[in-house]
Amino acid sequence: MRAVALVSAGRVAVLDDWPEPPCGAHEVVVSVRGVGLCGSDLAVVGGERAVPALPWVLGHEAFGEITAVGAEVTHRRVGQRVVIEPNYPCFECPACAAGTTAGCTSRRAVGITEPGLLAERVAVPARFAWPVPEEWTDDDVVCVEPMTVALSAVRTGGVQPGQSCLVVGAGSQGLLTCLAVRHAGGQPRVIDPHAGRVRLAEQLGAVAVTDPHQRYPVVIETSGVPEAFESALARTAAGGCLVVIGQSTQAAKVSTFALVQRRLTVRGCLIYDHPVGFAGTIAALDAGLRPGRVLRGRFGLAQATEAFAEAGGVAGKSWINLVPSPRGSAS
Image (spheres, one colour):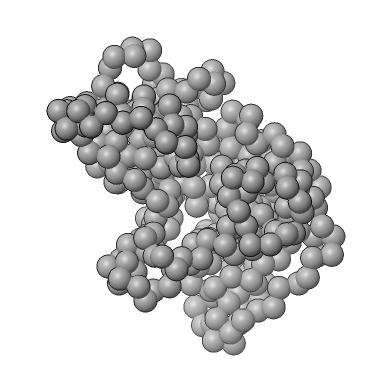
């Protein structure tokens, strides 16, 4: 079968002879229909995040249809349309026992510590294959995982109805965060040096910030750029909360004087917890949230190398459509 893999430093290729996945007793095999591209995928390709071996199958934001179920699986069936939750906690450590599975020190991260999902068929633990309605568009379904990250960040910041929230960075995760702020009843404000991204954020209901001195009760930093973190901290109002989901290994400058004098709270927000994260996102889509509106770059499997090369410059989110579907588009 075909799979998209990192085959050497910085080189992505479509492989035609990847082995078929065996189906374990507690697993399902999913025929993958689409995979979204994420900043962490680009970090793997760029060498910023090391992977265990080469070639390494990429991707973690996937959906598809179940084609086989393991001998011990009773709650999933062949033919179900599912979206895959790509973080597998151990369920045994103190963090898991407390319900904060994002902090699991033994968590298996698909595409990083576990082989990715950008293949025609993949085997995944059945409990992490979430059934979704047939009527949802492919665009919306492929965005479920990053939308879960965005909704988790907004909950962490405690965004209230009617409250202004500044989103720093209008890449794909920033755009989804703007939608999450609106879903919570807040008023998204956005800054980004890329004019095309700002225009797209405005189309999604955000307001571009022009006043460099305006401060906000909740600020969410999505870009991972150290200078953006510094700007985000400066724009957080006294007594406010800065939520950080963008990651960088480079140090950012922080004034403890400003932190203390303005009584700021800084919260790192890593992915989401199982099962409440995905369950909440699926409920939000049931209630009318349409994350697929952020999609702009659409590529076929044969164009995967091009998709990875162009994803960083696209205003909006990119995805790879392995099997064209009649379900159409959300945009």
